[in-house]
Length: 106
Image (cartoon, rainbow, N blue to C red; front, side, top):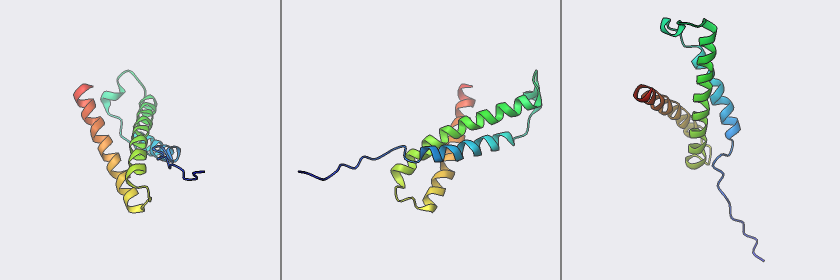
């Protein structure tokens, strides 16, 4: 009888943990952005703030997916310095990609 097991790589290991943090930080940082006068046309201040927070939460979900895939493929040993580097580079890259996409297609 063969007792060797094939180890399957889990691409979304710890996704829930990363998603919680990225969504919280994304919503918080988006909520703290100033409200421009062009955003206030036809709505209230708090409606704009809620919209900013929800868009930040969506941004956090996208970052969590990208970071989880990177973390589980590049940093399986969970080196702290590499985790921080991946988190910061993921945040910046996704932010720039979404800003480019919104400018190009939005």
